[in-house]
Figure 1 (cartoon, rainbow over the protein chains, first blue to last red):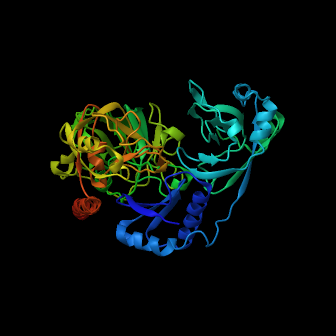
Figure 2: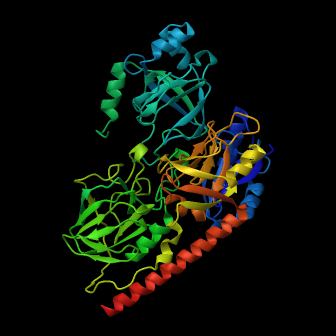
Figure 3: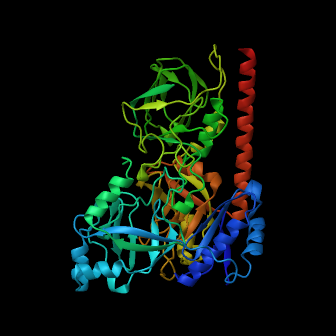
Length: 233
Length: 327
């Protein structure tokens, strides 16, 4: 696939495959990121995939100048689309839908003329792709929400949304990794920690993962917290 | 090895060189806003490099020390006192147990760096001691200092200092902080060509004011609105410290040290890394005059700045060497 290279700043170059969001393009982004990770060149510090591009951060003193890094990229991006596929993990996220955990579930159901159970069944039957991690620590941009669940944001954002809240905003769905203000329609909450700075891998999700949501009861939510929570937060 | 926070100042956080290697997890790099003042402050107290310091904004903290150590305050013009007596910035100062340092209200510039020999010893989180307040990450409980806080200090090297330091940096070291109108060099950004010719001209011709809605995450500027030739849906891509984004309001935002890792607004420019300290010392009301430079030129400016910094640090190390011999 064609791509363009441009400097983001003195120490980063972006490889852009397209200017639109597309699953096949995102696949190429992840395959390329995986290949470049494997080719590790000295002075290359980070390779960060986004929707349709990836950005390579380097130390200009060690890795060379922009032209040197571009030459290395051209050598190694090669004929994308046929080489080593990146491994895809599937992460199941348990969600307690509705009630105090999903205060907007009723509104979302009413908006679409569905029952709450129908919304939950549709949301928890999807397979969602992690296009990229960004916006805030551990926040995953997920693709794959059924168009039948697309719901506008709340007119007035909440001043605080609890960590783990699962929401819908327009055609997107996602999980708030941290307690932050937010305007998404909240349909449930997961007891999982999407971001924990003290874990070896702080973000539960990585770009390229597949996410599935599984419905759990409030009792299961409480039990999960008891079993896994070591009292932090 | 502790110090007490008597007063936290307006917004004082623990910062170091930043959290590298976690952009894949959506974690901002963070770290100091003004790396020039930071590195000189660390060198002045005899630290090797990337030790954590206190970054004060607008008005500084009041601290009581319990140990003998060496400190230095660099950055904007913050009147400092030690036990009520005026204390100079940009030089090493001996601290005795019980000493009280008061870093006052900023007269010029906007940020000061308080370095302590051995560094601020808060635990390292994801490879850095930097405070990232939005996620309550790092630093002291992930938040700015408050009265009553107790800050650990790292182990200082053996000083055995008896006589006060008679040397410090010349005022040239802080020259970049002067002036209410700051010239900031910037490279046209990835979406620069998508702005109208008038907007492209305005961006580099007009002066943009720093608004009060400016912090470690970004500076919101106000001035002539910048518009795209043709509106289009942007796909989120990487952004870094110094990226100038233009949201639909047309008023540019310069992303600063706590910048998120990705952004979805068109990027009209990228501030040259060499001029980020200038921007970090701009305060609300100051005017920014962007000046275009080519990407290669920005790299060259940065290399030259690092060389200059290296010469200052080498000179400081020589002074420390002589100090050790004389004492």
